[in-house]
Image 1 (tube, rainbow, N blue to C red):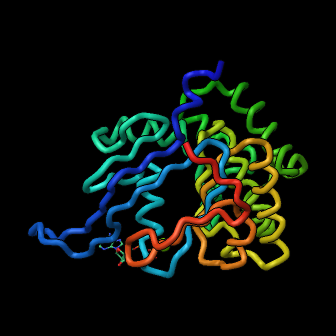
Image 2: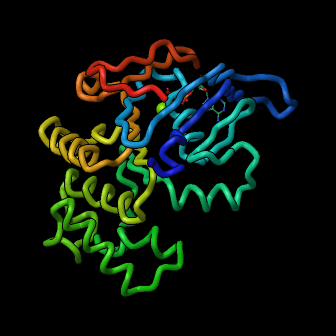
Length: 242
Ligand SMILES: Nc1ncnc2c1ncn2[C@@H]1O[C@H](COP(=O)(O)OP(=O)(O)O)[C@@H](O)[C@H]1O
Ligand SMILES: [Mg+2]
């Protein structure tokens, strides 16, 4: 028999709207309109669309940095829309691993310390933090750089540290916003290969990109246009419907 959670999608978004309003309450921008999206565990989804189409707004909601104006967002069956900030930030810390275009490492900390940060905020004891951080740094092939500072690393190495930091808390979802945007093509390809491997190991990945080449690589492509889903396709026909 399947365990009970297997029937729950990782992400379920129903009739979601996000509107940015002026201080007087009038609508400034309808950034997301009538979004419906179901993402199963283990999928690798690309969110694509032109600048201003709503990608970051959607990513902020999925990453629990923001809430919908209307509609439902269930993350592992839990409704995010009505959670207060404290609960939302706790959910974010435990379930989402963020990877940014600009790496966002802390310059004063070593590689090892940067990767320990998410565990520190969870109150994990030092010895356990160290051993978990070392393990994920080994996974991204940086065991020989533990005591370096970010500015002593190449861009590709910095992004691998950021990926290790995203992985260290064993999140349900890896959320990557233009992760190769600051890297040259060859280095970017190595990062994409690492993400492919993590997906093959069972990680659920959502990547925001405007790089059309990515569309060939991902098993599912969701295209946004003017705040709406324009298309949702599975190029490799591996999309499982639940
Ligand atoms: N904080 C905000 N306040 C008002 N409008 C915003 C805000 N953030 C984004 N927008 C607007 O919402 C729309 C979608 O933006 P965004 O989600 O950043 O798109 P993308 O990431 O695809 O470029 C754009 O028209 C943008 O100008
Ligand atoms: Mg954006």
